[in-house]
Amino acid sequence: MDVAALGPAVLGAPGPRFSDVLALVFLGNGCPTARACEDALIELQTTHGPQGFGLVAINPNNPYLSPLDTVAQMGRRARDKGYNFPYLKDVDAALARAYGMVRTPQCCVLDRDRVLRYRGRVFDSRDPARVQRRDLQEAVEDLLGQREVRVPETDSFGCSIVW
Image (cartoon, rainbow, N blue to C red):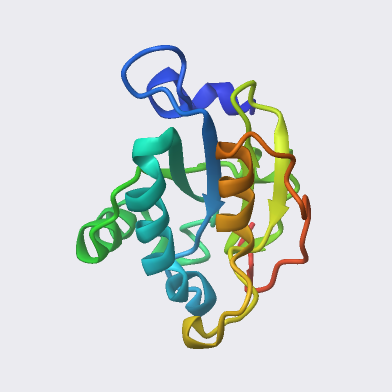
């Protein structure tokens, strides 16, 4: 599946929701590491959305093997946490495979031309209170500032995608 299959309103084709920088963040509802980064994702969208940033959360997990990852559970999670970004289901995990994702949380950042500029973790700790490096945020800020991403790839950690 090509990222363009997500549709222009999400990906930012010219129009009112255009995003100069787009983060695709792969999450799993039952993954403690993914759940630990949700507040940071909400804050990132709140802070940088007005500057041309867009975040899309994507759940690639097989709901038959991971019942917490059904579309209904995803909707409940998004409402309960107050997601301020779309949360989409990658039904056959084709998008996750296309971007080389193997765990949640894991993310990639695309520039205005939808060229991959960052792939890796959200930040450097499973515990948000111990974070020293906010890798996703730094990549987004580099691109919004018209700079090359200083660290274009990091090793991610979390829960394996349930294929």
